[in-house]
Amino acid sequence: MDAGSMNSSSNFKSHSRGPLQEQFIQRKTSRENLDRFIPNRSAMDMGYAQSMLTESRKGKENPAISSPSRDAYQRKLAEALNMNRTRILAFKNKPPAPVDLYPKDFFSSQTQDKPSKPRRHIPQTSERTLDAPDLVDDYYLNLLDWGSANVLAIALGNTVYLWDASTGSTSELETFDDETGPVTSVSWAPDGRHIAIGLNNSEVQLWDSTANKQLRTLRGCHSSRVGSLAWNNNILTTGGMDGCIVNNDVRVRSHIVETYRGHEQEVCGLKWSASGQQLASGGNDNLLHIWDRSVASSQTTTQWLHRLEDHTAAVKALAWCPFQSNLLASGGGGGDRCIKFWNTHTGACLNSVDTGSQVCSLLWNKNERELLSSHGFTQNQLTLWKYPSMVKMGELNGHTSRVLYMAQSPDGCTVASAAGDETLRFWNVFGVPEVAKPAPKAQSEPFAHLNRIR
Image 1 (cartoon, rainbow, N blue to C red):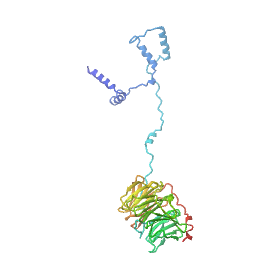
Image 2: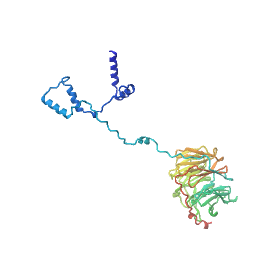
Image 3: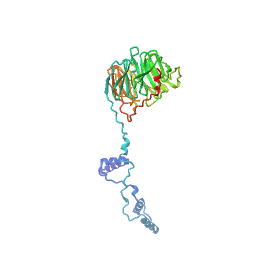
Image 4: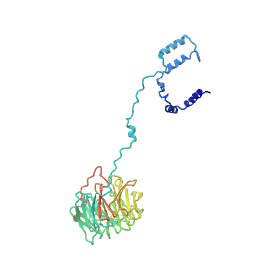
């Protein structure tokens, strides 16, 4: 076989491949077929082509027999098929331009993610720092609270001070003598006007902050200092070093209406749920209890709904979730260092995160799914967590001693922290809400009888 035969044979073999592969190879390796046209069969007159091919084969491969009737048939067929045409493959006009069913940027816009919310800037330093001399460095006390009227209360030794966040002015509410003090807890009533003050001598006093006047004293609740307080409308719940929890109705003379017994040591954490139905209590006995008012009986010792024993140190830090009513966060002391999340309907522990240091207090962001924790040794920092992933969003440093107390402004943006270094710091950690909610108006109806009950 000569070279020409070999080349033609080789070309035949290469052309015998699949059409897609062949087209791809030819376009890449050869320029002579770039203008080759592959006709569309829909543009062909197949009947005419068959007729012409049949006529061209007469007398060759299979010659046909001629007859008058056949000739007449061929003439009619030629007229019908327009046999005057000379080309078998007749090319028609260009096909119409394709119609775009979707805009040009449709698919690109589909693949792009929705515009993400701009990342909020979290300042790493405090906006303001105030001196807090004589602040008691005691993990089990609760000496800081921010009321709905935008007034911050802080107990420094035997004195309760009020700082008006709107004006920046400071006033002294009361200074107690050594037999009564020091102050062991403070808590604003929901109206933002009245404040409860727990004392070292086991008493609780109620004050009208506007009139700077004491309204009444609650006695007989506890046998030792009152380190924790929590309001539920007209009910003031007190927790003592004696392990007792007492519900006090401040409207009536016989104020003790319910007693909860479950802790064996000092009650250092108390928080009512937003619905006012469930109470969380934490103690120095490492226990966390959930109490439900639906199972409470007046004037009797009430059984807890859940007794949770997962923490291995004192439980002071408690925070109810603002967007899920049955979700509670709790923090353990130096021997535990964990933040735990609970389903308070079932008592199940949903998650536990080891923070690496003593958890002193917890606050939820009212506008985002975030949790802020304050810590003791060794960094004495505030940590912002993304919930539920619990990824750290930022750490705020500045305090040089453990950050024992935190309080949140009424609009949910600013957090005040007080530490053993005797400083009070303000952090714009939660940002600005999309729609700022105005502080509720003062409602003194639950306290209308306080002036007559002493």
